[in-house]
Length: 349
Ligand SMILES: Cc1ncc(COP(=O)(O)O)c(C=O)c1O
Image (tube, rainbow, N blue to C red; front, side, top):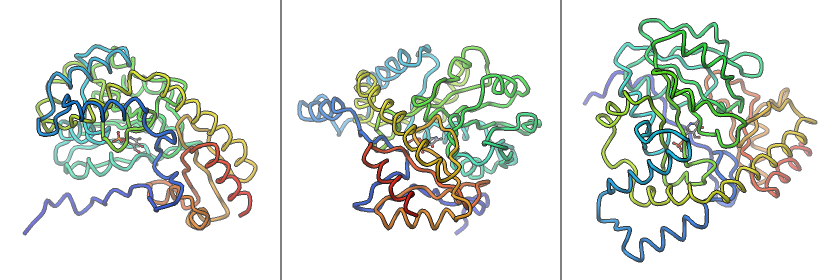
C-alpha cells in the first residue's frame, strides 16, 4: 500500500495539552465558555424538534448564519463562506490554490496548520523568519511566479502581535498571490484588516467562533473572501461541513453582544494583569490576543512548563512551533483566579 509521497514531510498537529483536573491554558479558549443563551437555544431547539439531528444541515440555516455574519463584519453576504473552524476554511483554500510544486510564504513562528496543509497538497512552504518582537520583514516577502499563497496571522499565534495595515497593503500590492489574513484572535485586538477585502481581489480574511465566542468544540469559522473566489470555494468545500447544532449556536452567539463584551473585557484585563506581573520575571511580548508569550531565558521552556504542570496548570511549550526557540512559553489568559495562580507559581520558580 502506498500513500502520497508528500505526506512524508507532514507532522501530526500537536494540540494544546488537556490534563484532567488541570487548569487548561494551552489552547487559547474562552475562560467564560459559550454564551448561556447558546446552550439554552440548542437544548430548546433539540427538545422542540426545530433541530433535527437526522436531517442534513439546512441551506436556510447556512444562509441565516451567513446573513448574521455579514452584519457582524459589515460585509456583503456575497463575500462570506463558512467552514468547520478556520481550520476547515484553510483546508478548502489550500486545495483551491496549491498544486504540486507551488510555493506558499509563511512568516515563522506562526500557526502550524498553514505549513501542514501546504505540504499535504504537495506544495513547498517558504519560511520567512520574523525579526525583533516577531514583526515580519516585509522586504523579504518576495513572491515568485510559483508563490500561490502568503499566510499572515494577525494577531499572530504564538507571538500575539499584529501586522500593520501599511505592511499588509505593501505585501498585497507587491504580488498576485492570494494573501490570507488569519484573524482568529481579532476580537481581542485594537484593529482589524477585514475592510481590505473590499479593496483588493487578492486578499481574504479568516475568522472563528472558537475564541471570543467560546465555541471551539463546535467547529465553526468563516472567511470574508473577494466575490470571485466564493464560487470556487463552494465547488471545493466538503458539503454540509458545518453541522446543524453549530449553525444554530453561531447564530445565537452573534446575537449575544453582552457575552462577547464580557469575554473580551475579561481577556483584556487578564492580559494586562499577566503582562504587568510577569514582566518583572521574564521578557513578555506585547499581545493583542487572548494569550501572552514569555521568554523564560536562561531557563528552558520545558522545565517551566513542567513546574506549571506540577502545580496543575497546562500551558503551551512553543518548541513545537517552527522558528521558535526553546525558551518560549505561550499562556492563554484565564479567569482572574487562574491568572493569579499562574503568577504565583512563576513568582516562586
Ligand atoms: C491562528 C489560528 N488560526 C486558526 C486556529 C483554529 O481556529 P478554529 O478553531 O476556528 O479552527 C487557531 C487555533 O488555535 C489559531 O491559533
